[in-house]
View 1: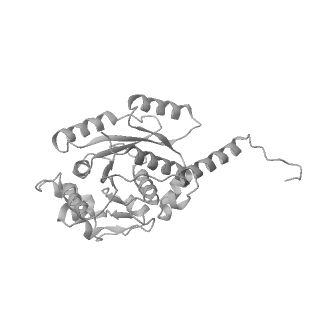
View 2: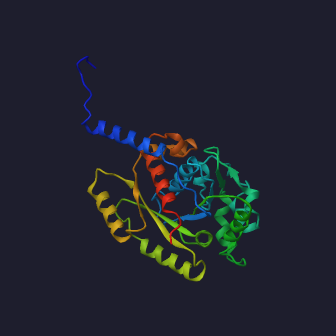
View 3: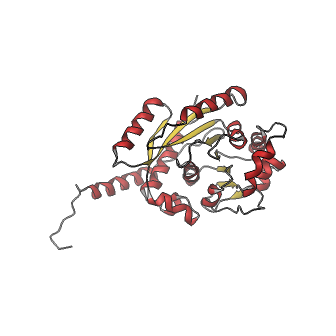
Length: 295
């Protein structure tokens, strides 16, 4: 750069850098309120590839970084949340399978994530793939996770529980809905975003009516947002029109850093804390914390 060259603060890149700096400062200056009682979220969407597990991993890390005690329950046989949070989940590892099928206590299978203090994981192993069939003949098959979680929370102080479930409505997902008080639905900002959502909401209403009257859809998070496309803007506007009270103001952008982080066994919060994706999840966590328990 020549001596007489000057920095042009009006370029898009300069404006983006300044915006990221402002967001970092705002987050650093924020102290999140802790809930008066444990908030239990099921993160669910029957449509795959919407950022469901990514949302579980990064929201849990963001909340833990902010000082909350967070428990992640990986109820997806793929075990991707366990991988991303660097906990052991090889075949034979004590896991959520042992809880829902073999009546083990959560405290017997819990692991501490190396990500942040206060972040704990109930891992999923490949054994969970057969759990749907094994649960069919069991007594109170829909309440097995709920009862184990209630016993655990009676003994241990946890601020947030985030349950990652498979992209289908089987007995594992029903167990997650029965155990939770709130549902967080990630919706990608792409075509077909709302496809299948009405059926998911009907299923949640059925579970609320017959199995868990405390269950509510409290939060909708827009993910994979590409601000360069008109489609993303239109999808976001449509979702906000249909769910004005549930949709967070924060939107999660498409981000290479978010995609890279799991391959290093990390959340994007610790992998690249200053990236746009990390800041977005920190902002989403702050928004969820401030909203508190929905009425």
